[in-house]
Length: 276
Image (cartoon, rainbow, N blue to C red):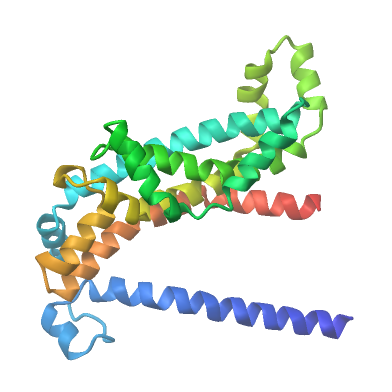
């Protein structure tokens, strides 16, 4: 058993290390090449830059009009994220802590929502937004992003909250706290590890989403960063170093956001392992 366990660990660590390298190396060379001149990149894409060309970032930011696209992505991403997590946490709280007749059916509906391919609903959503006169507005992105991520958010948070002992609510009731006070002051603080997970997942999807934004947004001043980068890469410039600078700028918020929530994410994984 010890040899089998050791062999499995060696295989698992080797596989995970190779998988990590396969994902990190392209990002590393993207960042490295973003600091090169176009001539340096043409001579050898895999060499290190002789001098760091920070001007690439300023030029890419200006040419790609990233100040507009960046702010649009920030607004849509955080608006969708806040609404999704707030509604998801409330729904998860009531599904996990209270018993009522339609609880199973309600949970099943949310579970069914995870089986629906998101982009298969693109045409119906387009028609709905057109009838509501929401086309070419930020709401046309915020509403679908929220709706399609509620299911995953609820599944994760509901499973986490279900494991809390009932004594938590009982102690709150004895202190005179109501349902929502218990939710805000007791349940939410100890749900932070699971919240970190759903926040990261929602942020990454909302920040990178392209197809809905392509179909539902047409005004240049409302376009999100993926749309701006697509235009920048395909039309506005042929410079590969500037393209990599723009892509690196788009990557920075995701990295920062993950690093800020990494501690909570690791804490949640460790707590789950100890609990199991």
